[in-house]
Amino acid sequence: MSKSYETIEVSQQGKLGLIALNRPKVLNAINSTMVSEILAAMEGFEADSAVKAIVLSGNGRAFAAGADIDEMANDHAIDFELRNQFKDWDRLAMIKKPIIGAVQGFALGGGFELALCCDLLYAADNSEFGFPEVNLGVMPGAGGTQRLTKLVGKTKAMEWLFTGKRISAREALRHGIVNQLIAEELLLEETMKAAEQISSQAPIAIRLIKEAVLKAVDTPLNEGMEFERKNFYLLFSTEDQKEGMNAFLEKRKPQFKGK
Amino acid sequence: MFETVKYEVENGVAWITLNRPDKLNAFTEQMNKEVQHSVKQASRDKEVRCLVITGEGRAFCSGQDLQGVNEDMNHGEVLRRFYNPMVMEIHRCEKPIIAAVNGVAAGAGMSLALACDFRLLSEKASFLEAFIHVGLVPDAGNLYFLPKLIGHAKAMELAVLGEKINAEEAKELGLATKVIPMEQWQAEITAFAERLASMPTAAIAVIKKNLKASWHSTLEESLERDAQGQRIAGLTLDHKEGVAAFMQKRKPVFQGK
Image (cartoon, rainbow over the protein chains, first blue to last red):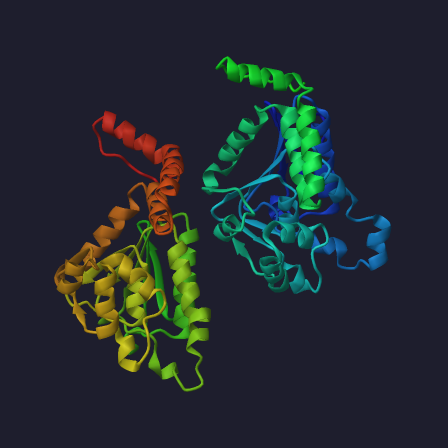
């Protein structure tokens, strides 16, 4: 990975593509450069067949404490429209490899929205989530109201978005925002372990599972079922399906090739 | 820097002394905030590995200063704004905190002592759930910590009957690590605090965290937390030092790292 980035650190470790937000002095406040760099890095990993999963984390005390307010304080509505401000965010949602997030400290505003773009979230005991936009007279613009509501339902989403209240790690766990809480010191280690486990599965199965689960979020059940079925059938055209089932019958560990 | 508390650091110990002796160290809004901020300062100070909260003069803390109480007061708001953040700051602190209860600890003063990890009592110390005598209820975490320390039944007796508990009775209930005679008071609490400060304090932080979490965890969650805690402790310099000292048959020197 020769490309150099300004706001993130990108590296590869085994089958994992690692992206670390790297503006620790401003608690990894998200600016447009950072979003486009995250997207570039993710699309790089997407195209790299050696990478099976992506781990997204934040350097320093926080995952990301929000968006860069300076950058947009003087913007007008049409500036956003003409710039198509959120196009990179839309493309982030199209990444097909699994994205595993590791959150410590704050994940606020845009930071929370970025966390909600992950497929799995591991969070430190000290993590805090929230949408403080309302305190600035605005609201989330990169999926916050939609993704949070689909995730936890209207009741809590409305409360959290109206009040800007912080959501503690335990509350986030209780409401299914995060998968597991981990001691801060071990967050990356444990997240990597989980990511490695996923990256050892049959990659095409993982890919089609991700696609089907995301489909469930905005598809009527019968259409989703149809979609799932097609993906299920499709997996029977892979070598990994043959290998997986043979290994099961022969009582040995499968060797998946991603084909 | 603070007016209602004295704050001193010596030999790895932060001494936070409630300093309104003429008012028996009763809480004012300012003292709530200053206790909170001094605990925060000690939490952040890398030199500090143990905290002591004690009182100047003959009382530890007599609770809320009733001079500040009037008919317009919203008791709930006072708690939310001044007491609860103070108790949370103490509860969040990863370093061991000793309440050196030198005299009476009444009302919220008792709550303050209950929120600490250890209670060292002078023979003149006493606890008093004073709230009921003015038609109020124990607050500032009192009813959270008390049953965990002494059990539901005894907590009920103390909170409802509001009888004075002297140092020996407190020891029997499990509210005191130790009762110390007056003439040895300062020497013993100093020795106890400095002993804690020279222990593997990173491991103590994990113990504190996991003990606190045990109250709302299943066995399965606790076992996982044990695994994570031991992994963290296993990576500390103090663990390596402890093992090396054991092998070399010498006394370990722990740095809290």
